[in-house]
Length: 128
View: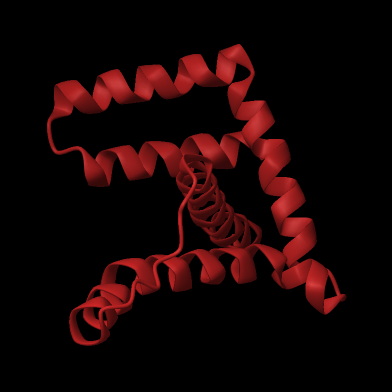
């Protein structure tokens, strides 16, 4: 699993960072994360996400996407709907966003993206 994460990370680095020098630095950082055990922790988190996503229980399989959708609705309300409602009706209907919610959103989206990427990589690896 960690090998697949390193492969995915290396591929992402090559696609997202055009400068070869910065690519090398990012790959070294990725390898140092693996050595420090952080990649192993991330691998465990991905395994949990994959197990939840493959669960037969509807709520277990969908609670993360539902949480992310709630965040999207709150953000759309505050930054798209609320300004127009306030403009036309003079009423503020925005919802307060705690700073921790942004962190949770970043973690949730990051976990989802990494989980989906690793899931696809594992499928490709098994097919070979």
